[in-house]
Image (cartoon, helix red, strand yellow):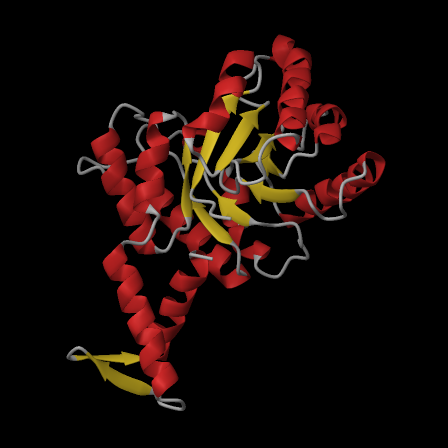
Length: 292
């Protein structure tokens, strides 16, 4: 299943939860953290559980249903899990993740919850936001070798980190990430690929700026990210298009694979006037694997 667009929806809005599956996002994330004020969290948990249970009755090819729980250094996340796990979410997004050890503790809780609710063992995946404090951002490479079989990918966010370090800007006058945020983004990308999981780029906060989103998403895809977070339904189609290989790209990948299949044992070949070698073959295979 493609996991290009990850759309947040407030967990305390029955109306928005009811509509989100129709927006075409690959993953819908019911948010119990920042989108829900503390007094509304108990009600939101029940709404999200109802939404998840409705998803169990929906067509299997629909959007994956995930939940962003509250941070693991608060008592709220256990209350989140107790309420939502009977609905069998396909994944849990972890905000303000501090490192692999914290996720291992979550995984143990998920295992028990799956047993209680009859879910297949290991079926609840995990996607952490790994950059929201300075210490967390410095620990990103530690995910490479950690025992985290539920880990589906890594993603990052800039807002909490900018507040934590007192940054008054995240992008420069040209719209490019400043050094700190560029460093974090690169660490997420490299660590995810080293680990063999998805690298999911952060959101574009200006949700009315679809032209800007198109440019940023295309650059993200070109850099090696597999998908991107979204905060508004209008962003979904733009992200999906940017992270879907074009016909020419697919044709080139197939031509590369065919060329090496026709010349077994070759280390390098010529294709349409240019040299191709094993890295080109690996990249072509990865692209074709994403198509299913």
